[in-house]
Image (cartoon, rainbow, N blue to C red; front, side, top):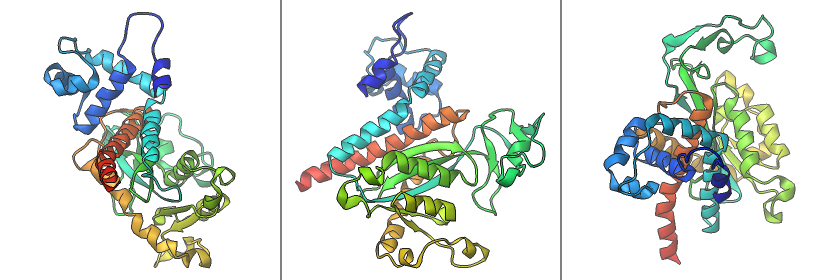
Length: 330
């Protein structure tokens, strides 16, 4: 990441917060579930272990909270969280901990730092037939907007749930050790999981012509029924990826099933479906006692930064256990 961090340094003005120190501080905030930047600065004032990790001397002054939060935008502009995730995955690849053939994708709901009562009618909603829905359908997100966090949308993943202000987090894992190889946050939408899954797949998995000869026809992708869509599955086929997507077994949704008979009978299908549950560990770890259940930042760019840092922290936690086991086995 040296090139990325070096490019973030300013050549004019007073010395600012060093990008690597900024990134380490945010990573600590995620790992230790520290709820706010103000609390994080308080920790740096007296916690010598945190100071050592960040790179501060014992007598160095801690940054002002406002200065720290403003400098955080530099990480967003430089896509530092994405580069950090890629750097961690490169280390895992060098240790031969990643599968190059079998993957799983899924998404989770991230509650926004906004209230449902903050949603008000838009002053200029789109005319009928010019909305963001199918064939120009005017949806709820076209008619209302949060005054607290305009990027947040009222959304629910299940019909019985209550719609809440939210974003969506997406992850692509490899099935060998359950490490996340690509992640991204998006605005909440019914099609967001499928659209973002293709983006993550293109980012992390080489195109058919760039793959190793033995992997050109062996790539698989496991997913739940939310991804059971004819267009999505056809996109996977065009990328030479076997669609191991769970199918509906009853009700009206059975008409959405788009797998071919040979895809259902693929002996790897059941293996992918069993391995698919590993991705829930990522979301469970991130939400159990950490800040992903409800983020305390506003705007998609900041949520995306926080989400990728959370995923990177999960990968680092997993690698701290996997690497010693591999070294002992050798």
